[in-house]
Image 1 (tube, rainbow, N blue to C red):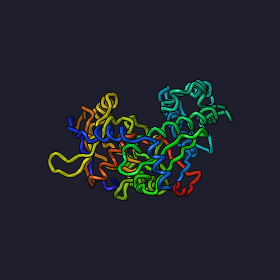
Image 2: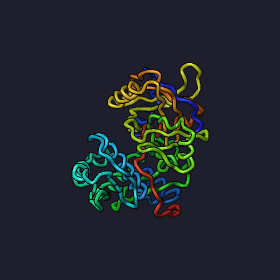
Image 3: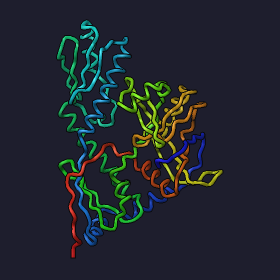
Image 4: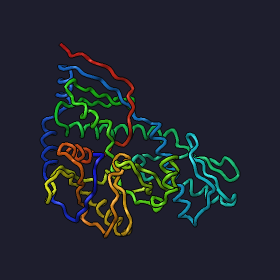
Length: 358
């Protein structure tokens, strides 16, 4: 998949029914009980996994930075000297101490849009003034605990969906009470399937390419030192280059309603068809209409697949990815998109070899 060459979008794409057939067939034949019996018979590896909360916290703080910056910009351009992450906190330094009162009101009403906050009624941030013109924002312990619970539960759902879609011996997946996940991997399981199930995040997203990508000095800072303008992020591409793009986006892998491997209607080589849900189809139409003439980067797991120019509004919410696919790699990407992205990375807490039960 890393060799994908280009991205083609069309108003209407006739998708195959392969995905639906696979989904219905697998769901009727697979069960955790069957997977467990297979594991007991063959033996294999027991993996105990846990959400990498250090990586989650870092990502959350990056989101806080962006939310603060946009909130201040939208409120009569409240001026800041600097907004940066220091340890487990976001530090916000104002230019003028007279803005402290207005900034306090904004910071105490920040709007989080992450899925994890939809079922959380407590305080997400602790906001404190630490100097005459400076605030310190820290994620609350209750919110971090909620994040871990939510991410683990959502991850189990994704892992189970992926498990049902793979070809060959399946894994046994169990959600443990201490926010850990147990995977029983039979000896006969293919390594690529195991990797696909819980190591590949499958995060697809669309980002407007920033003008700084045309600036040689800015690109050197991004590539060499990871320094990018506020609100931006640098992603490498599969050809050894990269681009500076807008960090925030509403078009992600959660937008994908269905995906399937297929063949190009004219050239007969493997492609991946996709369609967005209704909400995201409308968002993408608006997104392309507002950004005609600009480029947008299609990013999969922090690597740019391609970055075409928007020549006109793209309506209909359907399209296909074409490039250096084999039929099997096209099927793998379709499985990732159909199961949804893993919401977090994992770390392995324990790995044990289990002998077959006689």
